[in-house]
Image 1 (spheres, rainbow, N blue to C red):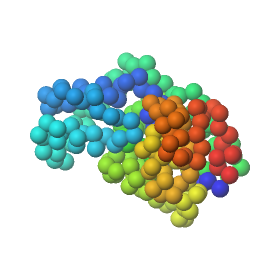
Image 2 (spheres, rainbow, N blue to C red):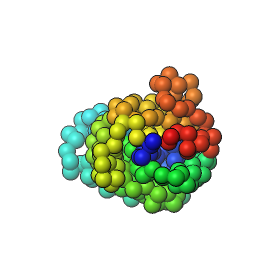
Image 3 (spheres, one colour):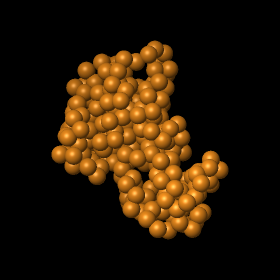
Length: 225
């Protein structure tokens, strides 16, 4: 039985209407005068920290902790502003799926497994009223590698539950091959949803345990049994 469900954020729980990408682009322009190529980065499934490192290296900027902090200080300010001016929202089916998990006889702990930095994740999910539904998480502050983030999120879930979790007691929910791979890396079950930028065919090729067009189509009891 699943005791911990870990959710990706962008494309799985919410769409921000491009607010995250716009904030990234503007933060690089504001702080470093970098305006070339940022909008063409492949954001889906990536970690914020790896994306920043990629841009720094492409423009000959030595990626020091101080410069990462300078970037993210500006990014989170811009992100909040863009969200308030944007047209995003919670993806259809998400609220019902979360409520369905909560109604199970033994509700699993809910957590996050995301490439967002923690503050960015909180800003996004608070804006859409979702942040308080999640107890634990793994974030880009923890590692640039999604598999390492998955292990950290699982371990935090184990500590919250007071015991070590078996691999099949963890369910990862995400919308990209990166989510499938990091779930597999910790031996978790994986539910892939085609609500982000990847098609069913793209996701199916990476062999998730379950594949759906929408969380509205998923019976929480079935994927957590």
